[in-house]
Length: 231
Image 1 (spheres, rainbow, N blue to C red):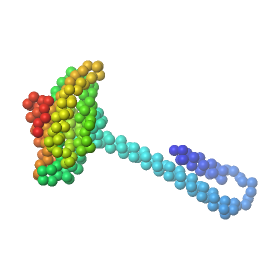
Image 2: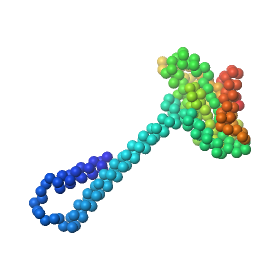
Image 3: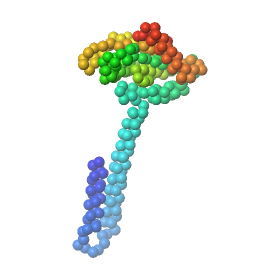
Image 4: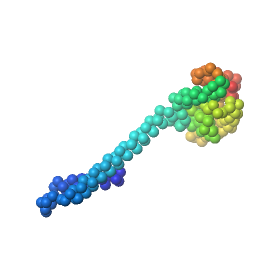
C-alpha cells in the first residue's frame, strides 16, 4: 500500500507540474533529461501496477481461502464436513488393492437429543465441540476426523494404518469420552458417551459399501447397549 500510494502521489505530482506550470525557458530539455523523465515515469507506473497486482492477488487468495473453509469445513467444530470426507475417501480409494486399503468408523453421540432437549441447543453445541476436540487430539496424519452430520462423526484412516490398530484407537477414544466431564454454559457438569461402528476395505467393495458396513455396525452398538465399538 505504501509503494502504491507513493507511486500515485509522484505520478500525479509530475502530471500537474507538466500540465499547469510554465517553465521559465522555451528550449526543449536535452535528450538525456527527456530519457531520465521517461524512465522515472515508466518506473513509477510499473511500480504502481505491480503493487496493485500484488494487493489484488492477496485479496483473491484470502477470499479463496474463506470459500474453501466454508465449502469443506464445518463451522461449529472446525472439522472436515461430509463433502470433504467424501473427497478424502475418493483419494484413498486409489491406494486400495486386494484386501489392503483404508478403514473408517461411524460414531454417534448417545442420547444426544436428550442433551439438546434438557440443556438447550447451545449446550448441545458445547458437547459437539468438545467431543470433536477429544476425537481429533493426538491422532496421526494418517487418521482424520470429520463431522458427517448432526451428532454423527466419521473417522477415516489411510491405507497405512492397520485395522487392528485402528480399533484400539477407537476404543481409547470411547473410554476417553466416557470419562470426560462436560462443563455447560451454566457450569452444570454432565457426562456423555459415544457408540461406533467400524469397517475396513475388502477386495471389490466400493466406498458406499464400506460406509454401509460401518453404519450397520453402529446400529449393532446402539441396539446392544450403547457406549460400544462394533466391528
